[in-house]
Image 1 (cartoon, one colour):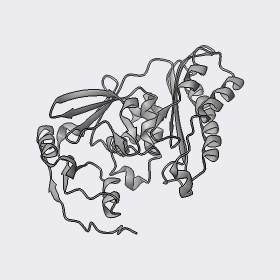
Image 2 (cartoon, helix red, strand yellow):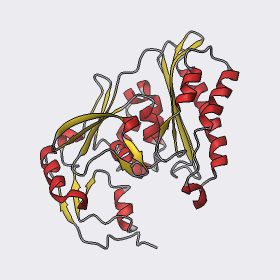
Image 3 (cartoon, one colour):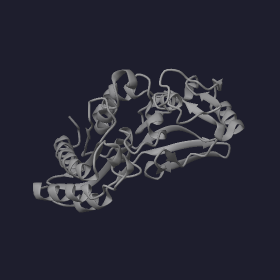
Image 4 (cartoon, helix red, strand yellow):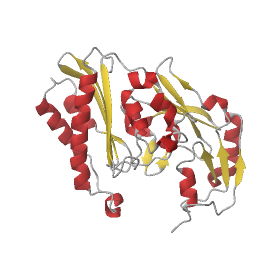
Length: 300
């Protein structure tokens, strides 16, 4: 069992003041270095011996990365705290599912240190923020030695703890477009205890047009090797008149996205349990999102 109290291995520690300086440091250390933002996941892995970086590049002193800009859509900087997103009135009003996901991410102490971008970069299939970000068509803005590139978030994850980031690349911000009028959203989660990682989680964002669902996004966590969009369920819901029979059918389709994983053998849950939980969560999240969109798109 790893030591959870101290960092037994020595490492070099740097605090760059600019993005360029951070990229240069990361290029120099290659795969021997790790980026530190909130540290709530990274430091645990270091203490338990799962990883042992020789260099830590602490990006918390870079002013350009701490901003959360909401003028056109929403831009969440790499060091924006989860707690800041949770407490933002604008996020709660326009990106309700994201505010709810932030509010259920660990404990208050964790949310006061963790960052949304760090939660995304951890690439845990059970992370709370990715499903909520996916239903708002979020994009990852990445910078490295070759310049800047933008990757849709649904292409950012390539496997458990694996992303498209290269060794010297940095996720500088996550950008969400401005939600269309008539959009309602919701995030729901099942865990063993309140502050635990998700056994399963789900996010829904939909646009209502009278009694019809004009468009829909459904994202799931802890059901596959990465957070996923449930595209079959989305297609079955879009353009259809809202009814409980339809929602039951759509939630069943979403539950079929569950894939067997090693986590079932670790005692967290079985694929069968997660399948039933996803069906319930998606059904409830669709209903809540529909209700929130019922007043012409202004989420309550």
